[in-house]
Length: 249
Length: 325
Image 1 (tube, rainbow over the protein chains, first blue to last red):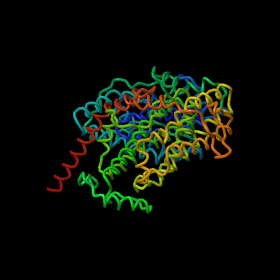
Image 2 (cartoon, chains in turn red, cyan):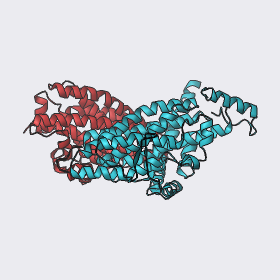
Image 3 (tube, each protein chain N blue to C red):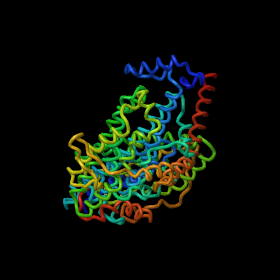
Image 4 (cartoon, rainbow over the protein chains, first blue to last red):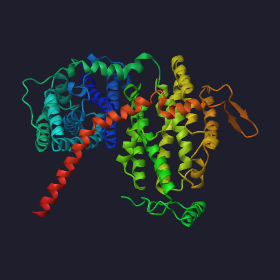
């Protein structure tokens, strides 16, 4: 097992998949300001993914670059958490998911600033600044939706109810995470859960939203056991790159 | 804010003469200055059409964001479409200096009474269309906007200076996509030529009807809103673009294209004005879809806008209560 490579795929795939989902809003957002903001966040995520997958390819040493990893792997080879591949849904789903992920990703990036790998530490340092904005943006909107109208409150609550069962996977640690953490390369995600929970519960409480009882947290993304949605996402994302093998763009 | 709502419908000819003298002397008109009502309305028309074009223009290019072939291309395209949203927002704000607000203008777009650039009623069928739009559509827009950056109305002119800088960047990006495709595999080269074949004539139509058939031109030229005629701008674009096509080994789809030594201009065959008017009047390939997409986004976002307004109102009430306490 090449733990740093596997670990970087998880980081990179989380970001490319969520960035792709956010980019679907471009031109279709509720207000022009949000077309700009969501595109901005998508750009940050895809930019980070490009660096992380590029570094993964370098560490793997098989001649694959970031594009080869993004465009020429099948769904079962992707390592993103399930939460991130779910369809964009309505604006409430997009915003609640963004809050859940951004709070997690900010904590993760703050820890990765201390990575033993200088390149990863550098990527994380830049990402921290970006995630701070993503957290602020999504938390502001969760408060607006929760405290806006009955409809927005209902939609936001439904989004929390639907997405909550996908949050547990973010903090599951396996041998890859433990090996990456032990070597000082990565961070064990289970160590981030308390801080995440504190922040997210605080925002939801201020927004008047409640956390549902769930008997099981969905999992599988880190080992390639995805939802059916990912195949369709990749079918669209990869079509051009796959239709013209070997071509440069 | 209504600084420039008409004071009266009957305008003093002496005042108009004074206004025209200022423009003839090269002065810039600012929001607080008096202006003829016709001038104000022409600017609102042009600026809102421009803003609508930016917003509708997000759709054909947005169509390829999820399929862009590399991470770098995906980011560039996303950033470009984001810039267009920014331009739209910026110009809508510009129209507010003329006493109309953005919501009113967006309603006009959605109910079909406002116009936007017809070029966005054509479909993007392949990745090369993203190159062609950057190269040709943004290229044509730059020729037009470079002229508008000298327009007599200050806020519009200043917006154009800023927007032109970004459009130049988009144009280079688009041209670079076309150059890469043209030098790529045979399939990529065909893709590039096909995109040029489809976008060339609609790009030339972006400059509007011939000067002899352009109803607004005389007045706009006299008031310094426009500084050059449609045909002059179109010719400038053609002269620039023919050489660029040759440089990347693509063929302009016009068998009558010929260089005129005397004028040093590239002369083109006839433009299909029937097609132009057909698309302007709503029967282009994507007119229905573009408006439907805008209406859908607007309708789907209604509950979000209402919620944001309700939240802001509650916050304001809470603040005034706590101040009173």
